[in-house]
Length: 258
Image 1 (cartoon, rainbow, N blue to C red):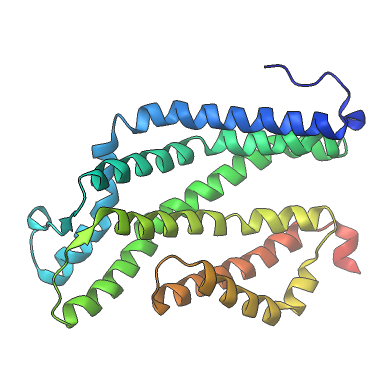
Image 2: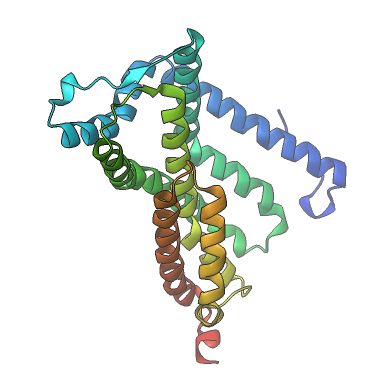
């Protein structure tokens, strides 16, 4: 499917919409192609997804991990649609480099010639940051939250009898949110590079940023427990302070001296 032949700086509003539609279709094709692979391995993916919880339960109860079986379902369609949703989300993660490339290709015509040279670094770094955030959440964040939340349940003498769809809501929500959070340094890099924001301003208004971070974490954090909101607030604040350093490195030299 060919893009409009009109030069980018002369494209009409409808031609921009046409290009946006084409970029979206390409993203959709990439996700569908990845889904054909992930759905074929849905049971293996599910084994990986449930492992952090099984490890946490094993620690709390002293049972062998192979003996832990906390799952139940009350609807015959629940396992089918839950595994399909997991396969779609995994397909999106696999296709994330193509997603970021299509985003960059859409905004590229509006950039200056020297700014267009950032395409390969942008696609590479943003993809690595998102996948790095998902990996961090899987290996550390979700394991930590599982230990805390299960510790409360076991302390109250409760037995795990969980639904797959509820577990996936929390699991996918935490991994997706962490992946997006890890994009903050990239965002602030470009904001600083294009002279929209400076590290000095970020440090000056860090208290305001902290309040906004707490509000955002409270509203958007998956689950309904305070510990997850606190956890993500601390993670976001740490990423914000890291972004200050990234913004300072990205600033033009003349801005650092002023």
